[in-house]
Length: 229
Image 1 (cartoon, rainbow, N blue to C red):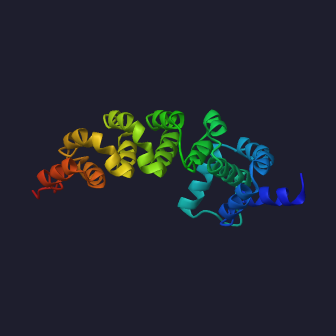
Image 2: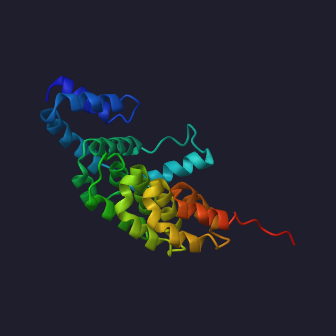
Image 3: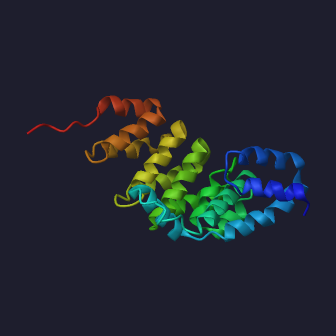
């Protein structure tokens, strides 16, 4: 592997602001270079240290406990490279290794796909309805990134509205991101908007869908306001 390819890989795995520009450079060089880059990206992705590092780093960020006596976790650099590798594989359209690996980092990389195939959409919809909250959130974020392109999984998102304790909010945000492409969800949202605990979320989703049917429901059901005792 020559020096220029090594430097290109390092740039892509840096996760820095220059990474998208390096992706453009790799794409301009053609398939041969993509073939040289892919093994290094897969190696970095498989070196993902897992959710424990994420949880530790999130706790440090939330509590502000990062001090000289509390240095970054030694695997933080591995996590950063894994996330950068997943995103680059997504940009390259390499969804199969991301889907087969099925880690949270790999699922986040799927969000970078320009044209997600049905198999990816179905898998993300399934994970959005799963029991693992972090995987559920990652899958929903990927679907939201697709916007109207995620329309084939509208039926799955409608079904998840019945999951009060888990995936309901994620499903609503995914439907909201689709805009008018989620119009099939309007009747179900018309029921949810009458639920005082969920009317605000249903209202927001209907407003984003914006079809005449959605607008009528919004007109007929103004935002719920608590009554003073």
